Image 1 (cartoon, rainbow, N blue to C red):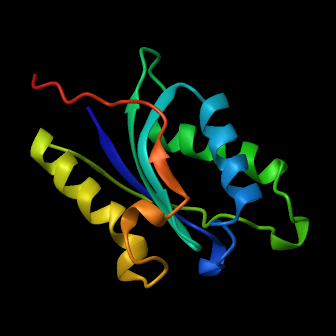
Image 2 (image 1 turned 90 degrees about the horizontal axis):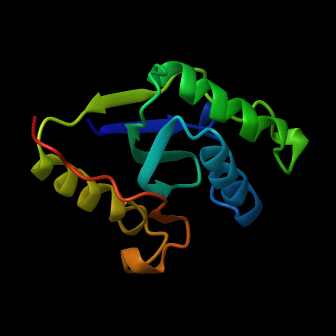
Image 3 (image 1 turned 135 degrees about the vertical axis):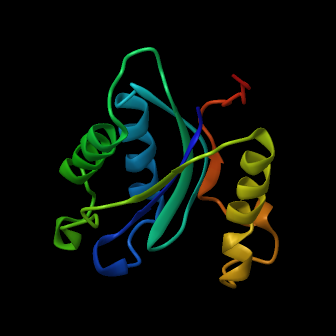
Length: 136
């Protein structure tokens, strides 16, 4: 199972796509490792990522709350607190094609916003874990 998640900054503040904040988010994802983060794009005021549960059964809501807490505790600019909107949006992908299609759409988000000319130029995108689609 692969889940597509969108998380926004509190009041859509443009605080996420900065090197120190971005590195902090990546660190929180790596520490909160009950879910694997696959491909991701961090925009100035929100982020999209794909994730999959590891062997341990931890609800998505609990995991998101945990890594957001880790990132907030180490946020590089305390005056930007609170960092996160309380809620988030998620959808479970139903087929492998939807993963590829959603990734293409998300990957091009910085271009549509006029932040870069080509998706490859956006420094706040990547992949932490390769998430494989498995039909069941």
